[in-house]
Image (cartoon, rainbow, N blue to C red; front, top):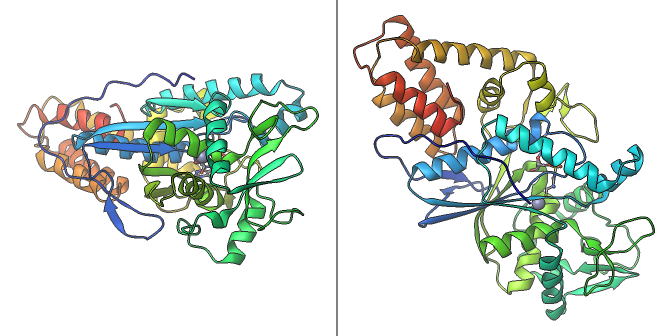
Length: 408
Ligand code: 5CA
Ligand code: ZN
């Protein structure tokens, strides 16, 4: 499917640094893009409702990584999916009396508008689960060829222990895995499974549900196989960064990796998992199922500038869980005004060291709050005293635009 338009990235003077990120599995800082090309897959939305600030935070996080890696001179290949057929989408469509396809298209279109407004660079490939079914079918044949699948009634499962590296992504205990699996779409208690953690790779047709032809019979894809099949088709057998919110570590990314390992026969699918912290609201994780949502589109409709929303998201380090409040937004709006006033002055305070500080902050595990602090310091001094470097305001504008995605 089509993605959304990307704004042009201004060029910046000088050299940047190689980017490091924290590997969510090992906890270590590692180079994000050690080669000449950087392959990134980020899990996309399930389009049954509008983009909330938790989603936006995740996509802005990976946009920051995309921008920092590009600035370091590395070519970026970025792929994102849309889970445009899955249980929650079908349930919402039934509950609201809508055709599931119409609902998915409507919410995907709203997501595109939100991403465009937030100045998130579009992925090179934006792929829906439905359009990926031929890839998933091939993947199913491959897994079956490895002797790793089995059936329970009309459903097909992959035996997790066919992957000797299973468990290496989230590194949880058996009881933690069982608990999260039950909470997040898995079916550990289903009778007939060989292991409670075996994942559904193909769900046989049910009355009233959409179904497609496959080597596993008519039905629809399991969740994890979708992302693995799309990532391997567009990026190859190894991706540099597999990204998403922290709630995807288990089971989604764990299962996705195990699917790939079983297919390829080696455990090298993902080099680094990067997980964004979860944004909460009113004391709980913002989630569609809890209903405590702040929608990007509603803020925009109320006249809030997308650049301020983006600055609000950047004011917290991506690795932490944090709580959205009105004060976070107000502070971002004030910051945006201060920066704009500073770059609008007819004189200029030298910005060379600010550029270096912002680059260093982002190269060190995407430390956006430190990057904002560096520009705050420049803006405060510029607003107080100014200077004689007439090119400096332009450098700050371009760096805010190119590296932070905030046009001043
Ligand atoms: N379609 C699947 C991924 S293949 C899915 O998880 N969709 S989603 O719509 O539920 O979430 C989209 C992305 O937003 C995921 O990366 C998820 O981890 C992230 N996300 C969801 N809620 C939050 C939150 N409260 N804070 C931060 N990120 C979140
Ligand atoms: Zn995914």
